[in-house]
Amino acid sequence: MAGTLLAASALTMGALTGVASAQVDSGRAAAAKVDNPYAGAKVYVNPDWSAKAAAEPGGSKISNQPTGIWLDRIAAINGTGGAMGLRAHLDEALKQSGGSPTVVQLVVYDLPGRDCSALASNGELGPTEIDKYKTQFIDPIAAILSESKYANSNLRIVNTIEVDSLPNLVTNTGGRATATPQCDTMKANGNYVKGVGYALNKLGAIGNVYNYIDAGHHGWIGWDDNFNPTAQVIKQAATAEGSTVDKVAGIITNTANFSALKENNFTINDSVNGTTVRQSKWVDWNRYVDELSYAQAFRQELVNVGFPSNIGALIDTSRNGWGGSARPSGPGAKTDVDTYVNGGRYDRRIHVGNWCNQSGAGLGERPKAAPASGIDAYVWMKPPGESDGASSEIPNDEGKGFDRMCDPTYTGNARNGNNLSGALPNAPLSGHWFSAQFQELLKNAYPAL
Image (cartoon, rainbow, N blue to C red; front, side, top):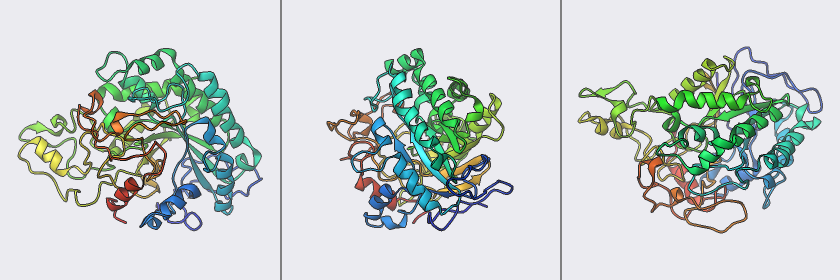
């Protein structure tokens, strides 16, 4: 029912029975919104990323895959440093479409006080600059998407809305061990909620736009204390600034992260010598051991708190394959629960809280529509080979500070259990091309290339 996208000019991402996939020529009225925008549609291949991937040894094996376009600062809207701007991408998408429904994947990521739990600022707007966010970031994006040649076309615009922001309001505030003053500030001033609500409302008013709110990942939100409260904060944002839950197509999990899609060698219900898997150091009382089970459960939790029953979910599988020689071939020994879990887990990170340029990671499942119940698509929202952050301080004019979680010598903090960061050395600024990471992802891809 769902097929892997191999070439933007040739194959679709699979179809769902009964889902409209009317082909609409550019300049005519856009098709009515569909339940799953990826069903029966091509997905846009970014020429900027594709050229970099193809220039790498072995990169041509994946250079025709669709990836997300990161609008992570105001300047990115018009293009920076030779990179295409939003209009250029949309024009190219119309060419690639050949008149067929085609998904364009955008990451909308420039909230005031962004990345409040990070060890260094990774955003250009200060905590109080909500008006600048609205008028200089969201409004210009909405204006471009509203232009007739795009809004009344066969394009389906999928927006990933503000990576990491709303979960931070739950887990990194209010006296928790992981709390930061910056996140307490953003919770108090309400600008994450206001900003997300404004983006949902403004962008969701456009007929061919599909908004997916970032919902963290299982190794962050999967605990009882975080699960429902995060759903409640997402509901709060989805009904702020004039927005409604109907302007949310779904959630996206694991954006730019590494959590394994499906752990086959153990389940949350297993036990060893009377000790449950939940008590292992790796799982640490979480309710979920992988991304698929989490995404499906969290989607249902949003329905429980008042979202439409047909909302979907995306999972970013760009870097969660964990193949290569370190991939376990079966369950760990049942000596004790930690030996059992650590011996069998595909995710080879030192700690599930490690997120920056992870050593040993590999490409995951290729982009695919409707791969599992409740899941609209597996996507590569984070373009493989683009750095998560610099491993040492690099002066820049992009608002990108030095976060020591990207430093392989860093011994950690409360958010990663005071472990080593697991990051690759010699990384460039976030978003810049990182050849060594790209080669690592190719080598450890699962399914293998």
